[in-house]
Image 1 (cartoon, rainbow, N blue to C red):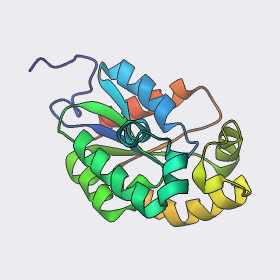
Image 2 (cartoon, rainbow, N blue to C red; image 1 turned 135 degrees about the vertical axis):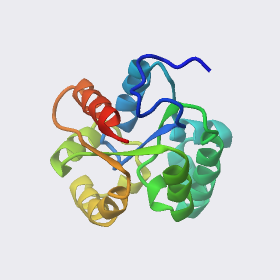
Image 3 (cartoon, helix red, strand yellow; image 1 turned 120 degrees about the vertical axis):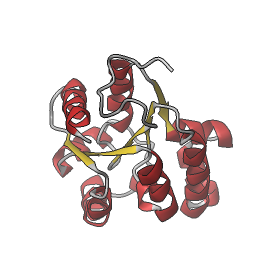
Image 4 (cartoon, helix red, strand yellow; image 1 turned 180 degrees about the vertical axis):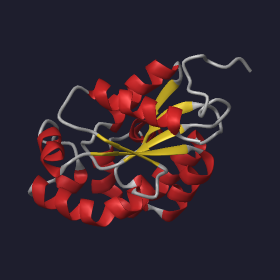
Length: 182
């Protein structure tokens, strides 16, 4: 297998890079840019779930509930974790599920992409398709989710803070962490 010279030595020969974190943190946007920078393919787990189900994430939540969605999410992520180097963006709740988290931690480099609540609120206001925010105050929901989820996200071996700056800044920080990570 020919190694891509853009991939840091610490990533060479390893499986996927999986981005975890809260909704609105930029996992998909940063993931696409990171994949391009590394010369790897990019996969958005939510998009793969929508393809498999033939409906949007919001429709799955509404029709079948969160438990059904999380089961499908786990199966899709398990399929994506085929060992091939790639960048995978997960939904905000994926890493909260014990079995999904174990798959990611054992078979990939997990990167927690983190941001302050103010940044998340600003970013989620741009889209109204997030089932957990439907009909609720985004700041309240995000604050409560962060209190529960951040300690779990912290299990990821790499932690990168996203700030109110172009997403390329987060990509650069991830590249630095991948290079330093052993």
